[in-house]
Image (cartoon, rainbow, N blue to C red; front, side):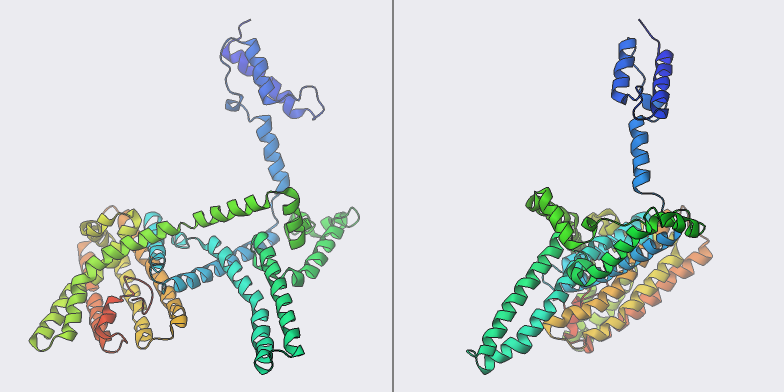
Length: 490
């Protein structure tokens, strides 16, 4: 029996209708795979995929399952979700700032900070979206939660060891009080270590480090929501609150199982399921790989090389102006400023151009950058002014160094000022790259020429900072505007 293509399609649609509208116990509830076999047996013509006419039953069933599992949230809980996400993003940004500040003062590792800032510029330069400048915020939030929670849990151990056991040991190492303090210290260390490991195994969320303090409130809330979701109270709640939002009752009565939020229950489920070691190992390596540390390091290294090539000559001349005397010093300083003025005006956008492509040869494509500058001169001049203005207060932090273990605190300020600068530079670059033609010449050229006095003023101030900076003329090498965001990274 030969069935043509149209007949095959009709048979398939009829089977699907029976299957879709019947109950699960219906004899017509056949799977899509069996349906294909039936149609193939009726026809020597290659059957047309049923997905071309109607959605498959499996797809419809999975869609309904997803809708039932994740129903639409009420506007009240959506606002709460947005607030929670906002707090998580703020904490993630703070974590990035701290991690970048610490890395900026570690030899070689400091290239990660520069690479990250260049990646921020590159993403915005490609898309034009300022939100793309928040790179890795969610991952940083998780790392920050783990570090901050671990640090908080270690405070009681450090306090007890320094204030009780150590002082008792200094007075009389063999006294009963010293021995008792020592035993208490060991027990406290063991309990703290167990608490930290348990929080790590459960995912490292900040609340997992203090689950004993949160558990009474969490269980009270869970029991309350279970009670509201009972057959007795749920209709009353629906009648009272559904006028606010149709799904508000479902959100209030949605009591998640303890395996989702109670640390002992999470650990028990993990050990019952088995393969705890393999899960931890694979999850850890996957997370570390997702950080793209080598990519940021490589980007920072290439960005440093290209930027140093641009700054080498004017920086060398300005340093020589301090080391030399007489007319040679004056000539060296003037030539250094003459070279520095156009470089300071264009180099931030050249860095954004490099960050967008990731190619070291992009540092030589000055014509492309100047063409984008001419297409959006107002945005470029504004970005340049903001970048150089943000850089000036940071010279005050280079007057005198702080102890090495506190250098990262100064770098916090450098990161806070450098991040917006990179964002606005990349935004201006993208505007120039998107425009098809420049504006009126009588507006464009005055704006372009305005970049010269801005750059010249910054160059003069930069050359004078060698007389107040701790490292003198050699501080000019530590140019935080274009290089590493740290005060004393050499």
